[in-house]
Every structure is written in C-alpha cells, then in structure tokens.
Amino acid sequence: MSKKILILNGSPRKNGNTSALTAEFAKGARESGNVVTEFFLGSMNIGGCKGCFGGGKNADSPCVQKDDMEQIYPVYKEADIVVLATPLYYWTISGQLKCAFDRLFAVAECNPDYQNPKKDSVLIMAAEGNGFEETLYWYDRLEKHLGWKSIGKVLCGGVMDIGDIAGKKELQEAYELGKSIQ
Image (cartoon, rainbow, N blue to C red; front, side, top):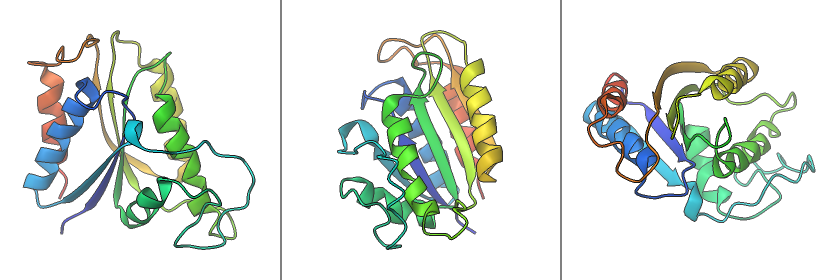
C-alpha cells in the first residue's frame, strides 16, 4: 500500500546539498509507489508561531495566521510520513524548518488534549562538519514527545558548498531509505 510522504525542506538553497538528498529520497519513495509532496520552505511566506493558543478552531485552516502554511496543513494531516530535511545550522535545524514545524502545533490544537497526529518520520541533514549530536538529541526527544516513530536518518557531513555532495554515499542511502518505504 502506498504511503503519503511530506518533505519539509528547510534549506535556504533550492539546489543545495540538502535538496540533493531529498531528491534521491523522493526518487526512491516514488519508485516504490508512494506519493511524495515536498515544500521548499525557504521560498515560502511563513510567519513564526505567535504562541497565542488561538488555533484549532477550524480543522481546514487551523492557525489564526493566514500565510503559506495553509498549503502545508492539508498535506501534513494526510501524511503517513513526515521528512524533516535541513542543513545543520549552529548544531541544530535551520530556522526555516523550525518556524514551519512550530506552526504545526495549530493542528494539535484541533484536539481537546493537544495531541499531535501520529506519524512516522525521517531526518535528512547535510552539514559542513560532522557534529550531529545536538540535532539527534532534539530529534529523538521530539519523536518521543509527539509519539512519532523514526524510520530512518540520513546525515551527510563534509558538504558546505553547493555540489559538494556529488559522489557521497549518503545520496545512495537517501535513495535506499525512500525505496524501502512500502
């Protein structure tokens, strides 16, 4: 049975190393019959969460802010798998991804107990260095808190400039991870 996969690409570079990883992941996932929707957050108009607790009153438009998150909410709610794709910035995820992810709380506000929809997830990261520990700490705790299940991680270090990822084994790992989703 095919899965619905949402990729939240938090890279500011549309043709960067993170996007190369998501392209390979998506290729493998589509070859296995899955439906993949990717949002390139860097080119979207998404305001930061205001912490107003005013969302959740309309399941079709859960947040009080009306911006490009309106495109993401319906795909997120239907998704079986959420892919968090980001470059490593100051030992964690990019601001673009954090901003969009924070805004997903409006969907949880649609539930009386603020329960998030249960999802499987994937973490895809590219970085100049190789220090992923802080992000993995955050990701593992996020999964636990949300009740999500991580089905894989692809972490590629040593890739700063656009194109540095060419020939890296992590591209094949991303493809194989996507391909493994049935």
